[in-house]
Length: 461
Picture 1: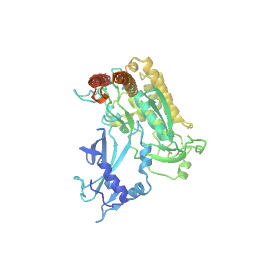
Picture 2 (picture 1 turned 60 degrees about the horizontal axis):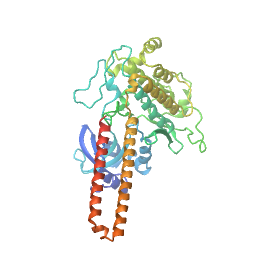
Picture 3 (picture 1 turned 120 degrees about the vertical axis):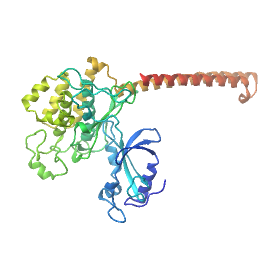
Picture 4 (picture 1 turned 30 degrees about the vertical axis):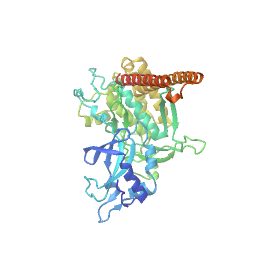
C-alpha cells in the first residue's frame, strides 16, 4: 500500500490510515459514496462511507484540512469516539481508513477517506410500518413479519419487547455509561461501567428510521440484533452522571440541550420550566425525558396498526388528541406489562440517577416473564440462547479432548515403560509405539469431526 502524502494529518497518522485500509476488501457500492466492505481476517461485512468532503477542502490547488480533520487528528478524538460507539445495540464506528488513487474519487491523486460502520443488513423499523401485510420473497433471508389479523394489534409482541429492550440497553450506555453483557459460560449477566466519569449523551433523534436490524447470526434465532443509529444530532452534555461517585459526584439538575444544534445553557435554563409537550415545542429544552417519550412513541407505532403510509404513521400517532389516543392504546391487544412500561415512558416527569439503566432492567425483567409465560415468548430464540448453546458445545468438546489427551498420555506412558523394561529400540524407531501413535491420531481426528458435525447441527437448529 502506497504511503499517503500529508493532507492535514500527521505523516504518521496518514501512513497508519493507509495500512488500515489493507485489512478490508471493497466489495460493492450500495449507494453513492457508500460501499460494502469485507474484513479479511474474519469475512465480517461493514459499510464504508466516503467522508473526504467533510475532512478536506478541495477549493484550492492544494487541498487544505478542515476543522473537523484537525480536531480528529490533533485532539485524538477517534479513539474516544470508537470507545463510545462500541455497543451491541448501537451502530458502531469500526475504523477510519484512507486510499490513494481511489477509482471513484473526483481527485484521484489525493487521499480518499472512509469511515467504516456496522452493516445493518435487514433494514429499519420504519420499513415494517405498512398498512398491508409484508411477506419476505421466497428464498429471501429477510425475517418473515406478518401483520396479525387482530385489528387491535400490529407487530408481534415478541418484536416489541425485542426493540424496547435493545433501545433502552443502548440508551443506558449513552446516558449512564453502563452496560450488561452475558457471560455464556456462567450463564450470568455481568454489569460493566465505562471506567470514567461518564458525561451523559443525548441521541435527540430516536425514530423508526434510525432503528436498524441485522439478519440473525444463525437460522435458529427469531430476530437479529436491533441497533440505534444515526448519531448526527447526538449531544454530549458535560453533565457527569456520577457512576464513580467516589471521584466526582453526579451533576446537579437536569441534562439540557436544544432540539437541534447547540444552544447556550443560559437560554435553555430560561425555558426549563416549560410544560413537557410532546413532540417538543420549538423553545422547549430537550432532556432525558424527551428521549423516553421518543422511545414510547416508537413502541406505540409498533402496537397500533397503521392506517396510512409509513412516513406518516408516527405523525398520525402523535397528532391524536389525548382522549382518542388513550382509547386506542387501551384496547391494544398486548400484555399489561408491556403497556405499563410504554405508559411510564410517556408520562415520566422526574429524572432519577441512573434511571435509564434501571428502566432497561425493568424492561428486561418484563421480557423474561413474557418468554416464560407467553406461548409466542416461549418459542423465541435469542442471541443469548445461541451463545449459551455454543458455549456448552465448546465446553463439552474441550472436556472430551482433555479426556482423550489424558488417555493418550496414559497409553504412551505404559508403552514407554514396556520399552524400558525390555530394552527395546529407541522410542523414535519403535514400530509398536509408532502404530499406537497413528491409532491415537486417527481417534483424535474422528472425535474432532464428530464435534464439528455437532456444532453445525446446533447452528442449523
